[in-house]
Image 1: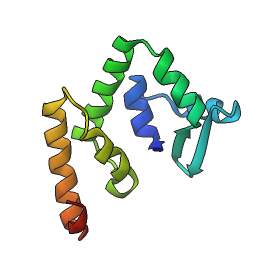
Image 2: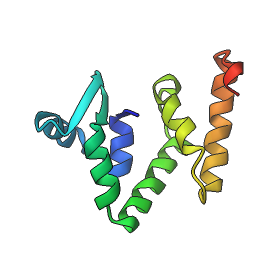
Image 3: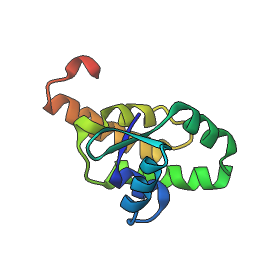
Length: 115
């Protein structure tokens, strides 16, 4: 799935990520499916999953879940990411709050078939 600058900032733990994202785009390590949206190429994502430090990965995931639980974002743009994070085991407090926000947004937009 792709992500926005705010999600990247949450993952990195810093608000200053736009230049980093542009550098990664220039190096062809990220793709940009739409303006303001970024995504990893499949092989880069696979390598990151395999080579990542488990403690750093867990901390980044905590920050991302905090962002989706408490932050402002476009539900429409982040819908696939919100659905994906609700499947995470061991993050019950985050997941139920994110799921609650997602259900409210789905109802509000008339997507009852996705509930």
